[in-house]
Image 1: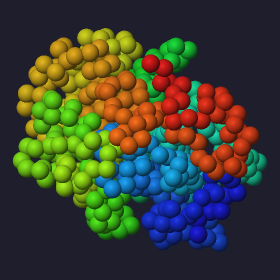
Image 2 (image 1 turned 60 degrees about the vertical axis):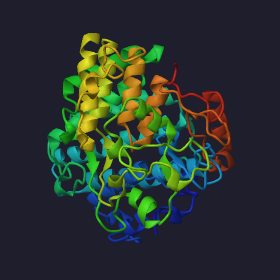
Image 3 (image 1 turned 90 degrees about the vertical axis):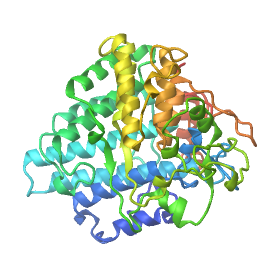
Image 4 (image 1 turned 30 degrees about the vertical axis):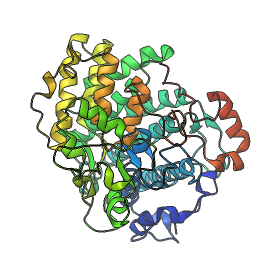
Length: 477
């Protein structure tokens, strides 16, 4: 049985993470939880994070719908922005707090208590844990806004934790990540590390790339301009991703419970719940985008791609299916990639945070090329198309970067949705059934409203209302 934590974060069904329980319980001694090795707890947290970000299970993660890359067939509540029927915010909140952050906290405590490790080894392992923790905290802020932070993960003192200001959390995450980089000096968890296998150079690039993302997110906030610029400059100076070889990936296995979660929902389930959304397919068709046969199946015929109307009760046979490669159990999970980083560099150049606006085109081209290379698609003359080339593509620099970043974040629904929130492009469709506006955040879990009401109410007031269309502090355009 998992750790019993008397906080609001654990008041959900443990059965919702059955596969993680199977994975973790192989070595866990429920009578002596502190005896679990730090590397096991660390990897359990890492796997939980990758699983949550990769999954398309409608009870856990609907970001591919929020980014309007996919839509649904028979059951369309999620594509129509019904968050509450399946308690989606509750499940996401619980998974990240309980199965990622709490395991990371315990893993760090066990590292620091390990008398067989040198000071440098402890520091490096703690730094790797810190990078994953910062990634997770940012994901929670970027989903909900204000969240429990300083009083979180401490049930002995704070059973009902207060919510912290999201912008203040961001500033602290930047400080934490900046400090952690200095300790990434050796292999840390070494071969037990399932992301980079202890490659210290790649861990440093990952930490700097994540720092770049943090700086990018706050770059439109007037009161945080100086921090955004200094953060971006520090990240670039430290060294960010330079190729797809640096991508933060998790290699999944060919059998349960360690397959890519996509395989569970697309193949093992025997269901046909998703088709490509017309929002994405129409946009790619207009550009004659060569990535279409790699993103999608050609079930309607060679070179024929028809997206299902977003949010409609779509007939599975009549619309373009999800690409074959995404049905593979070993398809890697992704936390961050070179394409994403290169788009941030293009943005930074346009703002003169790092380089000059003239350099933006080079980073933009590198980002698009990285996406094509990752998917194995031939890029051909795509970069010279008048609607793609940086000098001639329609719109402002924000629209150019935003459109292509949204396209490149395929299968990374959260970052596709976030690119839309950040750059306000491309135009999304209203869901066919509900007609509701596109959400800009998750609403707070129902458990928070019921069990932590005073703090939930204060947080809701502070952000301008616990609504799906309340904008996060960095979403100012």
